[in-house]
Image (cartoon, rainbow, N blue to C red):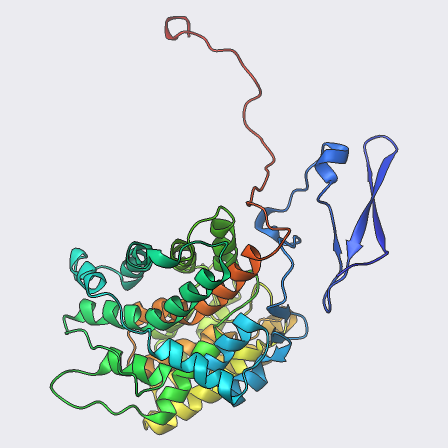
Length: 431
């Protein structure tokens, strides 16, 4: 990172100042304005951080205009086809794909840390049965630091690694327990002879009364969902994890903060909103009318699952998710599924309609992932929990990168103050 290029800022009456421009390995250059306030007394104003690079990172790269998503330089299309989720976890955490020996060791450690403290399991009984699973997730993940406080020294690389393994290993167990508690079924404990995703599906869907055999097609579909959601650069939840972590907070608290951010309907709830939209449309015959209303700004109707804050092209994850959707519905004999046929009809019209084409409103990953999860038997209330499980490794990788960055400082955004200027206090009997 570095460049000899400069950017000149003109301000005030004939004043100007130069700032260095920094270049990454790919992507746009950035103007280094860290000395702006010290030299000029000015701040920048960028609500939503639309044009602000808050950090430098080697983990994930997105080119929204070209529809590109890279994990550590590898295209998501290649990783989703050729890797399993734990290989991608290793890549995000370590920067390189594992060889056979490294993968065996990594998988062995994760698989043997899937159990949670038995007292943590009792924590679930403190929640109402009808609590939203994400509310339970926030509480339980945040409480991990009370049970695993032997590795919370964040300046110690070994402690950070232990915490990373614990989080990746225990999130499937915590998510499955949240589901089992919500439906009144007994917890299913993990089995070390199963793969990461097989284990999760068994903990979600098995019951003591009968044997559970994971379906390899469905396991692969869920594993792909995990891969596609593992990281996505500096989104709201990742930025939340980094900001919380910048204060020196323990990793379990930081991941809980990320879960809170992801819970917001504008972030992690998009696939749930897509499914609700399809249910509201109801039938293929009503798609045309829905499209007409979606184009009317005064109708209040929104086309969910199309367009993206970053992608201005076809979301590369959506193509993979569409294929996975076909595979799952074919395996389960649901290819005539009402919602999937409705989704295909909606996609076809939207991609051919001039209004949506001009605005580059392409399907995103959320458009199909909700349908896939529904076909797998995952209830809508659990969709964002699944997202949290998958994104945990990305959050950890980003957190670790920040903690080990020599330029790391506590986050402290500034503001444009628009309140009252200084004024003097007046006693109440004189007001």
